[in-house]
Amino acid sequence: MALSKDIINNTLATKQGEVAYGIVEKLTDAGFDTWWVGGGVRDMALGGFPLDIDIATEALPDQVRSLFPNTVGSTGEQFGSVIVRIKGLNMEVTTFREDDEVSDGRHPESVVFGKREQDAKRRDITINALYWNPISGELFDPFNGEADLKERLIRFIGDPATRIKHDALRLLRVIRFRALLNGQYHPETYRALTEQAQFIESLSGSRSLRELEKMLTGPHPDRAFEDLWETRILSYLIPELYACKGIAQPKDYHHEGDVWDHTMMALKAFLPEHGPDVRFALLFHDCGKATTFATKERIRFDEHAPVSADLADKALHRLQATGHRIRKIHWLIAHHMMMGFFAEMNAERKSHWYFHPWFHELLELFWLDIAGTDPQDYSLYGEILQDYHKFLDGHPRPPKQLLSGEEIMEILDLAPGEKVGQIIASLHEAQIRGEVTKKSEAKEFIRKMV
Image (cartoon, rainbow, N blue to C red):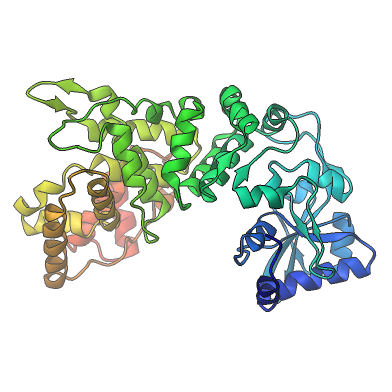
């Protein structure tokens, strides 16, 4: 599985490849050991183009800046990363470093710069410890990552438990890479995931959220979340979702299985145009069924949509999502069961829904909900879509929202919360009715509301 000449030549012919080659060349000429490393090299070894090219060097950050004056700030600057800007491209150049032995599982306590061999030892899994030199064509593979790639084998470098305790994010990264490659775990790696699952609680919500989003936007999100459940990581990270397995659904409407089976089937139906907010809404849309389960004339989940929305709020707050994102996902989940009522609405009520800035994503969530159901019945979806386009053809869309949620909070000195969402909705309706047409009128309108 060595890097093919075609992949190398085609990569170097791109603007990114040309710039990355030039950076390595300049640092090497200055006497610094410098290589391409990580995901970009892994992608090339798999026969594809690298999405990003990361560069690792023994040059210290100040030495990199002296050779490349045009640098910009980096979130990883405290860990030795410098962003070099050349020909409009930002390339990350990171100094080789050693693992810090003292860590709280959230971030290293300090940074110790080192050599390439030490830098490789600190990486999480073998397939991410591949170094390639674009000048010499040499591949540095100290942990047989190339052989593991051939087997699609996900394997920790060193002692798995120690790697996880050093940075709990690796619990999520390892699962994401297994799903990304449609691969398999080394037995010791899988055992460590299950034994160290609770350590995920030491990780900040924002870092977890970023990794979960990568899983949801990857090629096999259902596999990632099945692994999160099986290893029990999900029970500590998002117990609201963990509770969904084993929650039966009415047999006449859901041949696919329980609530968890339905959600996983829907995850498989993602299309490229489905954005991350819709994907998170789909993930949480039925989590309330675990607490609203009841048996009457059949299995029922009364009011599960608003309950699911509230549970999603709690989970997303723990994951440190932005207020705007939480409000949007809450709205999508809370309204995903009302789709059958649009035909009965008059034009004014339809305008409230059809002109809503998130309505198109509500339609996407509805489509995904159907895609996760057996038997699939898209007839209502088709009727709504037809009526939606017919309504838009006959009714001009109102102008864009005059005030953002952030502007409203600043004007009224409000904290993020439900009140802001209510004001946004009222202002939107006033625009639809034509009562508010200018930003100055919008400001006056919200002040009168309060």
